[in-house]
Image 1 (cartoon, rainbow, N blue to C red):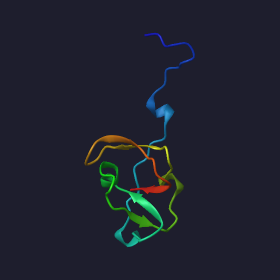
Image 2: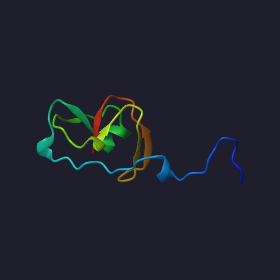
Image 3: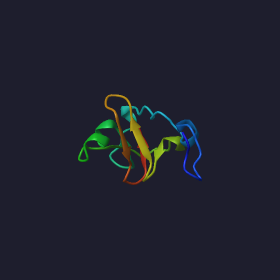
Length: 88
């Protein structure tokens, strides 16, 4: 197979950073702060969010335009179009 000029062959592992979400404890859920993204928030636009106001590792922070891939409970790929949030 030949690639178009200027293209390079790469694996998905070379192109992106993959992490699993953080396991939030119920005691960390708040009524304000950054939303916690759960599967239902990806599958249903009007699903309620839980929030967290604490600081967690930055690797769990999702920003607008990030690609999220659900592989547990339901499969799908989603572009996050909201503001900063935490990945559950």
